[in-house]
Image 1 (tube, protein in one colour):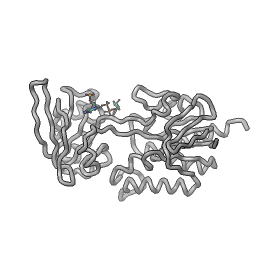
Image 2 (cartoon, protein in one colour):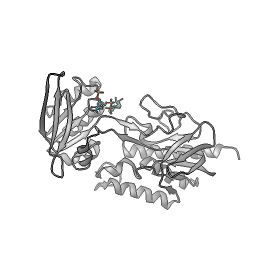
Image 3 (cartoon, helix red, strand yellow):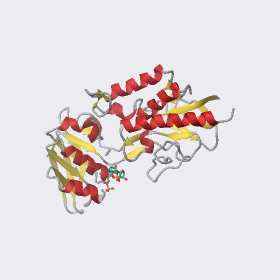
Image 4 (spheres, protein in one colour):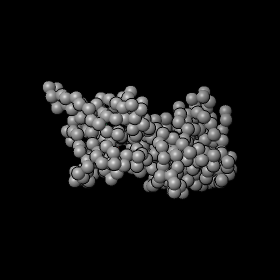
Length: 312
Ligand code: NDP
């Protein structure tokens, strides 16, 4: 069976940055790109907050550049996803969806997190045309427009507050009669005249020609009190949480209750020696490309130290 010294799993900013650093350290890593090569950023449009691009950069182009940079330094890329792992003892054993398997001395898990969606057919249809799960990425396009944010947690409040700095009006669609967000976050939105909270509301459908133009909502206050109506808007933002893509590894590495991989301090060390985590799979708080890239660099540096310290 094939054996690799350093395996990188995931192809977002964390995975590619880890690959660039590991290649330059002479570790000859193998990187599995997974189901969505380039990760979440390939789903967004222009990115204006990644340093080094004063005129902004398309998400796809940014990831393609990172990939090329890693390849240029000799990283071997493979187009498969990891479907099973046995990290009970080194060398670690991994299986992939192209029917291959291998063992690895060290692993960097950079499988990211996936934004949760409501699961509506119309939501899929307008993805990138009025539907987004990232206000920081796409809010800019809604300057002076009307938008809605779905969710009642800290992210939803933070995104509503961010969008209120750009949009003319922000509706916060909350399914319960109260917000789950922290008191500080609630205070941040309660005084904002642009934000209107719609409690006990659920989304039924998004409507528009080529781009979202309105949302069909239902307001439920008990079984007897139910009303359906349409709200005209230009943008619809999901903020109902993220799911870390850690399921394949969670039988072995310690995670929090949500499945985010736990690491030591702000570094990449997991509970399994030689197994490191970088990017959103271990980050419930920041979820920014530049932060993920930084954590990928840290993981590669730690992997190099780990491998250098092994006997033989
Ligand atoms: P949360 O899980 O805290 O909140 C998700 C929200 O989405 C809840 O209000 C939930 O409703 C709602 N929701 C879930 N599914 C649906 C659905 N199908 N339809 C409608 N609404 C739905 O996720 P967050 O991303 O907000 O936060 C994750 C973690 O990150 C938290 O620990 C949070 O504190 C932290 N965070 C901290 C920030 C800060 O301090 N600056 C900023 C952002 C996040 P319900 O309440 O009914 O379950």
